[in-house]
Structure formats: structure tokens, C-alpha cells
Length: 503
Ligand SMILES: NC(=O)c1ccc[n+]([C@@H]2O[C@H](COP(=O)([O-])OP(=O)(O)OC[C@H]3O[C@@H](n4cnc5c(N)ncnc54)[C@H](OP(=O)(O)O)[C@@H]3O)[C@@H](O)[C@H]2O)c1
Image: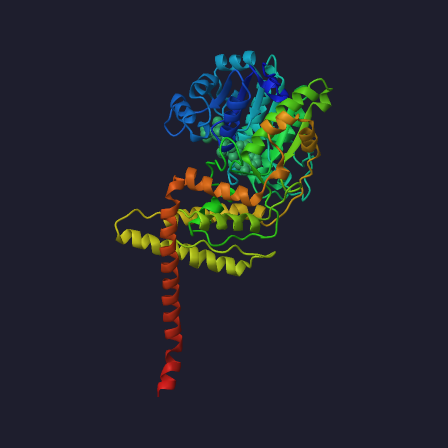
């Protein structure tokens, strides 16, 4: 008997269609392209790719396809599906040649705009270009596409982080985005920054401000186009697909987990009890793909005002995990499967609702920076490259930028997202899993840590037994050093007392 193939609505929506993706080479973009190739049967994926650090677009494409995220994809299918188009977010019209632009206009029907500058501390004018002007150019391209079905824009849940409750709404802003874009054409950086940084409305950085401005731009100019705005919270390594724990970013929580596991990071100025709104990259990607399908099917025929919808892709409302829990699970995993590069035993994670600023600073400068100088001195004496002081400096700046998000808690109501989840068929629920409630954060964090070990530290799982033996010696050495240090201190301070008793 012939088995009946039940087509999944999402796959049948994407089948044989061509997609345009920006930000494909980024952390999220790679997982998105992988899933589109493996599960959506798309015809072509056109990716916007710039030459970078002396590497041509062709060379970057070759390297991109060889990335370990694609290990579950058929390599022939991969190379025939992905087509790189030379372009740059900061160039007028995305820097596309007229023939490439025409190719998109003629062939593409779905657009994912994920590219952005995610550096929190970029100068305002640069960030405006990468995050807002580029969105304007993507929208203009969408307006020219003959058969556009949907435009999925990747924003952030923290676009309105000055509000403790951020719903699936594009809130009004005090500044006019069009005026700002116009002013950026004529004003120098300094004047521009002076003039417009007063409109941040308590946002902590240029990133969140410009992500909100990009949404405003879409709201003002996106009429007539079916647009799904996805707002993920903090994106972390994959939960299940294509492999558990895949990630190539050291930003944010993964960096904290990595450096903590090596014994380099000993403190963070955070609120342990606050919810760390984390969301795995594969859940976000399944969400983006589902949003594309959902918006095209339910909103394309609506009147102009109804064609745009915002979706919070967050976990805090459904399945919260606190910073303390996340970091403790990470430490637990690091002790269970240590790295060969561990320098010191990972510290216990602070508990409660408050980390004292004084304790934090003492640990930061003495246990982290001084330790780094000590190790670099030893490396210098041994004639090896000194790296730790630089790394710790970078870590301190990274943690500084994270502090705002690790000391606050937000509520992200997600009715639109829940409605979308409910509309998936059983098959799509399995194929494009967005059910955040089923994440077991302890298991997930263990997977994330093993992913860090494998993909960032490049250590195979087979090295775990050797690393465990090494860790035992690290613990012995660490406690011996601590004991010797305390003995010396005791001796110095108690010497007069000894003398007194001996006489
Ligand atoms: N990561 C998170 O936790 C998080 C959370 C919420 C929302 N988001 C949003 O998710 C999206 C993806 O973030 P991500 O973490 O994947 O960032 P990412 O790893 O830094 O990737 C950024 C992507 O944008 C591209 N890009 C940047 N400037 C460009 C330019 N001038 N021309 C062409 N391409 C350029 C990069 O290309 P190159 O390889 O050429 O540099 C890269 O592909 C962003 O829109 C971000 O705002 C991220």
C-alpha cells in the first residue's frame, strides 16, 4: 500500500519559492538558511553578502557553505540553492547591481531581513545607516518585487526596553524617523549625536534606539506590504536543530558561560533573581519561518492598516529562567564536562536578589584583572604569547554592556505569537517547533555548554575524560595556592603575636 504523504502547510507554502535573506552569515542567519534548505524545499535563497577583511564574496560564500551548521544538509543541494549577491547594508539600495536587483524583483517572493549591526556601542549615525537606512532600502526593494508575499523583519524585544512591559505594538516615539534620516545626510557625526541622543527615551544604547526607529520606518512606509516583525529576546545556541548547542557567538550569555567555565570570569554585576529572557536560535528561526507563512496566509488580503503584525519571540512569560539558574546550570555542566583550557575552577554563582557593587569591583580587579596580569607574566617568562589581559579587558567591556539587561526584568506579552502557535498543524508543530513551554532549561544549558566546548573551544566530546583528570589537578593546585597564600598572610599578621607568646 502506498503511504500517503501529508503535506505540511508551512513546507507547501515555501516549496519552490525563492527567498531573499540579509544577514545570512550572522549567528541567526546561518540557522535560518540551514532550516530553509533542509526543511522548506525552497528553490533559491539569495543572500546579501559583502566582501570583508580582504575576502571576496565568492570566497566568503565558499566558507559559508562549509560552516559546520550545514553538516545535516546535502552539500549539492546546498550549493545549488544558495546564491550570493554582492551587496552592503550601508550602500544606497543595499549596493546591489541593477542585474542582481532585477533578479530579486523577478524571482523572489519572500524576504527575511536579519542583517543589522548588533554592537551596542556603535556611533549613532553609523548605527542609523546599518539598522534604519538599510531597512528602508530593503522595504523599497520589497515594494518593487513583482510577486512579494511577505517581508519578515527581525527586530528585537528590547526595542522599547525603557518600558517594563513591551507588548506586540509599535509604540510611538518622540522623534520623527524621516527627519532623522534626512538630517543624517547633512550633519556631521558629532552634531548629529548631540542633536538626536536626547531622543533615546532612557534606552541604554544606539542599538535598541535604531532597532525601534527601523520599526517606526516600516510602520510609516510599509503600507501595502505584508510585514511580520519578529522581536526575539536574547538569542542563544540552538536547542535541537540542526544539532543541539550550535552557536558561533561569544556575545551575551554564551560568552559569560564560556568565560565562567574556564575560570576567567568570576563576577558579573547582575540581579540573580531577574528573568534572563533567553530564546534558542532554532526556536527563533522556526518562529520566523512560521511568521512568513502565517502573515502571507492570513494578512495578505487585509486592508493596508492590517497587513503588519509584531510577534514577541520571548520565553519569560511562558517558561521563565533566572540569571542565577542559567549560570548555575552552565557551571554545573562545566564541572561535569570540563574544558581542556580551564585555568581555574569555575566559581559558584551568586544568589539572591542583589550582588554587592563593592564585592563585584573587588573581584573584578583582583580576581580577574590581577590574575590575568599574573598569567600573562608567566606566559612572557615562558616566551609565549600573552593574551589574558586583553581578553579580560574585552570581557569587562562586554559585561558592562550586558549589565543593563542583566539587572532588569521585562514582561513581553505574546498574544500574537501564541495565536500563531495555535494555528500550526500538528505536523508543523513538530517540524517547526516553537513551543517554548517544553524547554527544560537545565538540559538546554547543558547542551549549550557542550556546544560551546565543541564549536567555540573546538574540543571534541572524546576529550572529556582527559579534561576531568586535568581539572582534578587544577582543583588541587588552586586550593594549594589559596592555602599557601592564606598561610603567608596569617604568618605576616600573626608574627607579633607568636613573638609575644614565645617570649
Ligand atoms: N543575537 C541576539 O541575541 C539578538 C536578539 C534579538 C534580536 N536580534 C536581531 O537578530 C538579527 C541577527 O542578529 P545576529 O545575532 O545574527 O547578528 P550577527 O551575528 O552580528 O549577524 C549580523 C549579520 O548582519 C550582516 N551585516 C552587518 N553589517 C552589514 C553590512 N554593512 N552589509 C551587509 N551585511 C551586514 C553581517 O554580515 P557580515 O558577515 O558580512 O558581517 C551578518 O550576516 C539582527 O537583526 C538583530 O538585531 C539578535
